[in-house]
Length: 257
Ligand SMILES: [Fe+2]
Image: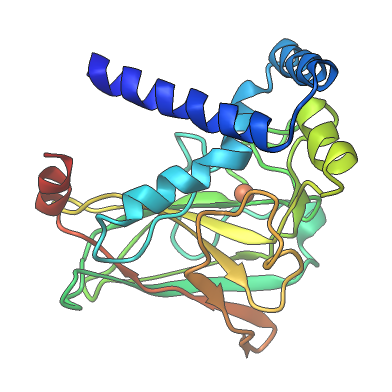
């Protein structure tokens, strides 16, 4: 392990040195860069900064060993302890008139055989782009829940639609993205999924709404966009049909060897 740490650290240092040489970075620019890192550390935003740029790459590497559905970034807003739900996620009274959606689909193995009893954690934003149990005092049960697949591996649950939202942008990471890099801090509207099933590898995924803003320009890259669901309505419900294919757990064990 120590050799791996040494090898990776030195490769990072060499890669950064190459960039400094390529751009002929001055001492003043170097000091400004170090100063920005200090501000990022003081704002406790190092995890945010690193995740914005690099988390999706780790997911991409992990996906090389996956045969089923691809994984996406987990993001910082998953919380343990969401309630088990059946027909609908809990919707706040003030959101009752918001556009609605139904999440449905199936969980199967690599051969398309249904996986019954899989538990899927789903979570998504409020209509203001916030998350329960994270922002303000929104109780954890809203817009989060654990749903279970039936004997045919199918799941279905209703909710309101999430919206695009900005990652924390009031600190040094937001300044880097928006002011210094002429970019933005927006993510497209999405639903998070975490599929657990005994005997299979966990799958963390996200689904997006076709035609949604920022899908092609996601500030977090998102780790791929396998599930961009076409616009389809059933009465007033936007239908988000997402079918997951799970790798057997044994494949995960072999991949780690
Ligand atoms: Fe999210």
